[in-house]
Image (cartoon, rainbow, N blue to C red; front, side, top):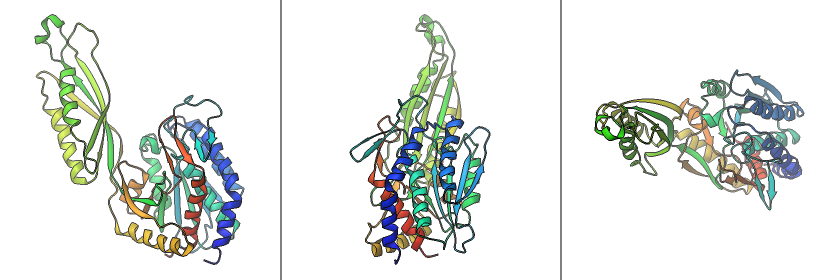
Length: 385
């Protein structure tokens, strides 16, 4: 721990610079499908990384934003540590006026400040601190993900393939989603989204008994799906619905979209059987259903290797007088689920702390940026293989 005071001093020195960098990233509009904006975020991070002499690799995509890997100490002998954060947000173009960020007290407000521009900023911040204090013993890779908010569907999962290829030999993969104070995510629910399209038969409402109502069929299905509300098991939320054409006719079409979260493979099998049963055995005679599955994340199961890494991290934090980290779980999916499923030791949600994520009032604690950089830098410097 001989360089710990130097590490703390350097994070203090760089804090305001990286708060400014954080804001710069949030000022760039980068919804998932806006490749130009996502690419601008990547170029901005890469340009700053280049000033430290880090190795830069760009991996282009046609529709999705380009992924990047930024590497320090590529020739070092120890196993690499991988840091990862995503550049895309859910906030559509024009959702925020300019300037898009504001500071009030210890809060930074703006699009993606917590999810996940804060993760981008703290990763490079930690690497900059390590560079400045002369750390050379271990490779550090920083992967910039391009389409996490769409469950990597924009790149047709090729961004996940890229992340795996760059991480397969690592000691640990740190996913820098938003941080819960004193906690790290070691297991997660899986999730998926789907749209059901119901077809019926239209008739004048005076003879509605001859028609086959798509809305009635959809309503029955929605009521059954909405029964799933177990916080630690299966949950289902129907979020969008549209149907019908005229006020005076039986609706021959209805569609609705829903999301499902589940904890285990058995729960996944259960809800999928229910969904297919509802679609294949319609309640309303004469109707038919088709289903399209869209974005999805697998569940992230508890694994011994992640708990072992967390224990090593806590030994470092205890010696450094820093806060211990407890293992916990999350209701939703992330890239960490895919990495863990592929056999990579993964610690999730280790970025900045914030709330109101995916809303116009998304906020982050300014002080959590320095805290995140310290946590990451200390682990990278002192963790044992």
